[in-house]
Length: 345
Image (cartoon, rainbow, N blue to C red):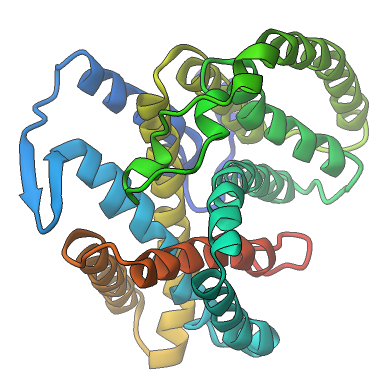
């Protein structure tokens, strides 16, 4: 039995290593779900803390600010710290953030539109991250075929967006007009059309799922006749789909948000650590251990810098516009600095 499992999951088929991959990538959604469920049933201590302007629960602060908000900012480590990536995309990396900030800060309608776009781009961005991992696992087993790429991308979008559209949290994703930066992700106003069409949307989501999943499985079966199968990819997609359905379909928006953002940020920190360790070692002529220390130090320093803005600074339009710019640039940059197809990772 063990020999068969080892044959299905050889060490070379992992991105980093078996233990690292299972803890950091494959089982990350399940880890996030278990931690948040322990919080939900009060099985983990969750004291109230005061940090600058922030006053709230410890785990909300840890997941929402320290992990979720800060992981948006550490994109700069790869975008600007990786010499190859920066040279290739120098113009857009220098001019893009400045242009976005000026528009967001100067025009109220752009500011409000950015809030709405930010929420749904976040969901799509999370789907793309899982899609990227699934493609990496395909490559690791020697499957470089692109025949399943479109279907894989649709499947990942369905895994993330489907439960939101069909579950109880669609309403929360439609209204972005709140006063507080912290509250803008926990909405209270309900557009009349959300409740009116929620049943119809649920039926459409279920109908699309019922038609797409059999077709996807058939296409995957045909592809497996010609290409190697990554069982890590199957596990990753299965676990993510299960957690997404449980989180967005059967939990409150706040709990679902914490679950999804916990494992997304967890995976992202691990990916940054793995991918940028070699570039840091090369740039500063360091050995592997010293490079690891430098990467961890940079991650902590960048996170602490953003925590200062989120926790201590008064939430002026300037600060919120800056945070929105960081968020949008994170989603945008990740679309071209992590390309598996172009061998950026």
